[in-house]
Each structure stands twice: as structure tokens, then as C-alpha cells.
Image (cartoon, rainbow, N blue to C red; front, side, top):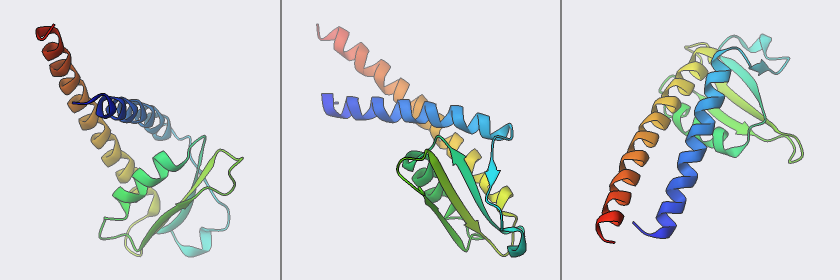
Amino acid sequence: MTLTSIAEACALHVSCKQTKEYLNKLKMGALAELAGDEKNGEGSRTFVFTNEGHTLGNALKTIIARYPEVDFCGYTIPHPTEQKLHFRIQSRRDRAIDILKRGLEDLEGLCDHTIVTFEKEMAEFNAMKVENT
């Protein structure tokens, strides 16, 4: 493992921990919806995440877009000076909120796996480093 890959792994580890903390907050109801979506049915919604950006948006979009029941999934940052993420889900079969919750749970599982793998590899790396000195 090179110094660059260690730095990249550390950045990913920190990002996963922050995402996991934010996902726990979301499960407690800290989520807003944009007004005006009511006429499209429960399968289409735009959710507003505050204090989030491309890290959460892209990871969540990548997971949710692969679900077969999802017709469209995307996100936008309305303005660079605002710390808001607008996340859109459209489905003809399931409620958008249920899809979002499933996506957050899947992302949380992926983060858990990443953290466990990272910590295991760092322990092995540090043990090898101690042996070589």
C-alpha cells in the first residue's frame, strides 16, 4: 500500500463515517420535500438535504438508479453558495420515500463494509510496518 493509496483510503473512511452519521439523522425525520410534487403521485418526489453536496448525492444516486422500479433518479445542487442538495426520484410502482429509505439503508451497509475493510487493512499495514522496523 503506497502513501497515496493510504491517504485516499483515509479520505474515503472519513467520508463514510460522515455519511453514516448523516444517514442516522435522516432516519430520525430530518428530511424536507419540495412543494408542488403532490400532483405527481407518491412515486415522484424531490427531497431536500441540507448541508450536503456531491458526496452524498452521487453515492445515493448510483445506488438508487440501479433499482429496477426506479424510472428516474438524479440530484442537483441549486446554487454553489447554498448547502442544499435536491434529490429527485420517480417511480410508477413504489413510493419515492420508500425507495429513498431503502437507498439510504443500502448506502449505510456499503459504508459499514468500507469502514470494516479499511480498519482491517490499516491494522494489517501497521502490523507489517512494525515488523519491518
